[in-house]
Image 1 (cartoon, one colour):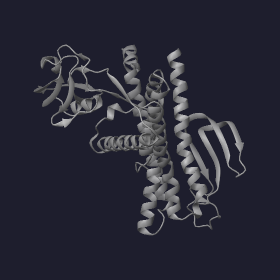
Image 2 (cartoon, rainbow, N blue to C red; image 1 turned 135 degrees about the vertical axis):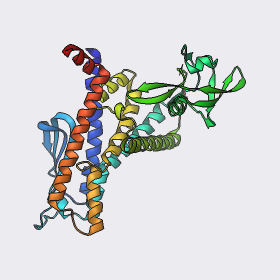
Image 3 (cartoon, rainbow, N blue to C red; image 1 turned 90 degrees about the vertical axis):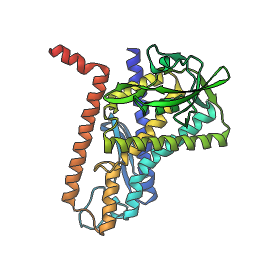
Image 4 (cartoon, one colour; image 1 turned 120 degrees about the horizontal axis):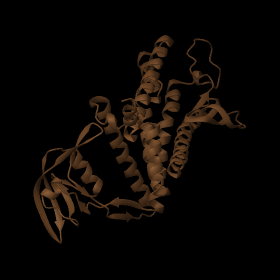
Length: 359
């Protein structure tokens, strides 16, 4: 029960922060471009709390914590009627694109700020590429690797931390690779044939070692900013690469998590303390920002695609065509929601339990 409560509380807090900053990006950009914002809501449905600011914007905390929105005057008005000054419909095409893009940009900025604070206060924690345990019957055991071995290179690629090793191994199932590692001051180089394992339908390489040697690198203010920029860039690149492989090659489809899976992960990470939760929050913020830039109608990326087409052809997309695209986009999002929820339930064992119950 305690784990469930912790997971729900941590998930609600993380989602609230992510949604707030995403929508804050839209809000600030709209105000900067002279567009009137009628409402700013974290969550959907009936308002639990609300108040009206001097600007006229109604700020709300709503009952369904599944997202949020900024309601701008004239949003979605594609008619040929005269546009009201201060409405989104009356804004220039560049202003519209800027307002829409500001949400994902705000998520990337949030990640950078979180990493900066985390590195400045707690430092950057890394798992060293040192073997703490060799699993029996694994490729590592067959090659004679031992606890205490420090892996320095795999297949000619330098290994700086345990994550580097995991990534290189995962990419080469059932492949013979050259390993370089240090043992008691001596350098050992040998060929090791990796194994493989199935992770949610995807086959990845397997070495069969574990690592638990942590180090913390501390930074001054400037160093923390530089490290945060590097971390944000690296995580953004990795996320983009993952999205590309998912969309065009279907890789990692079975690893996708929905709200249930993210809530479970958030609860587990929260158990390790606030620094771990902040690190996860930064990673999720990057993911949220980049996913919103995918050109699916209804997402920010879909609207940017409409504006790009309008700029190219010199006229707005016809309302009927836009409505069809938005319905298609909604169908895609709902399908992904159902698919990821089934993924989550399968990982939790619920699907197997129901199948067993039904015989």
